[in-house]
Length: 104
Image (cartoon, rainbow, N blue to C red; front, side):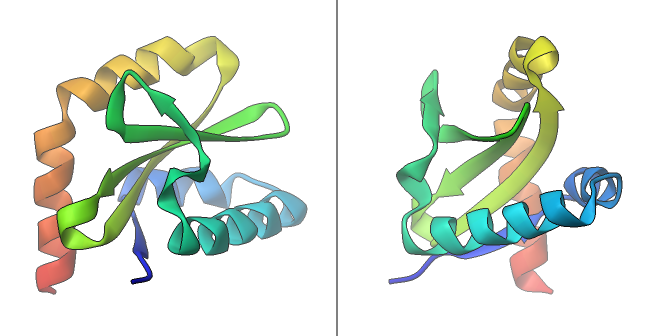
């Protein structure tokens, strides 16, 4: 079964800052993730993944039970650990955000 990809408001704001070519790269990444959400690198816990493009990193969570992927953030290498820690601390909040998206 194909996964569905959803984004947070923060992720959407980060996309707006990107160039047209970078946005196209992200669209390709979305297509890859729909087919196989586990293509990115695992970060400390199974559902937390990172997909790199150029000098940037896209962070996302996989919710197998909901057959969904929630795109969380885009950052550079310099902020990588800070972002990973933040996502891990807020994983339950992100599940709630995704459930709210799915309910609407």
